[in-house]
Length: 246
Image (cartoon, rainbow, N blue to C red):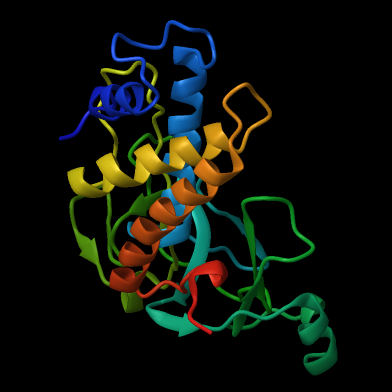
């Protein structure tokens, strides 16, 4: 697994500080902060890593929590059945009284809700099988990376049996790189070494500091976006607008 030190040594070479960041134009802590920001951006743009979270639903309860390590929702399934997304405005126009109705949910929505929250419309009219988490009685109360669930006895329940809510989304790194010797989490080595390096360069050269250089920032952006778009093409994510062909 590639470590941040591989990126750090290459970055220092590129800015003619082979012995390390000692000139003060960029500190090691700033480098670490930019590396973590770049990793987050790369994962979000490419959607290269997915995560499934399956949790219990309760009768009459319309809203549920999205785990912190899922950055955005891509698909939602109820009892193994895909349900489409709708906005509150669309629901108001097409399903009068949906907020007061309890039935089998037909849609999900995320607008007009607190962060990291998903709503089901209409609210469920049944309790699914309770899905325990790995840290019971502490949250999260749900299980990762499977549409099925395992109960306390070790028995496996398929989605049509437990009838729970499954969210599929882009995975977020749960740990940050705190030193230059830390491994770069989640990413394959080639992507980590290229993507993180050029992402840091872009942020440094476009920042409000002594190293600001518009031409170097544009070149770094092009290199970074090329790596992002290559992985986006593999995962089927939309290509960034500034890189699409006319």
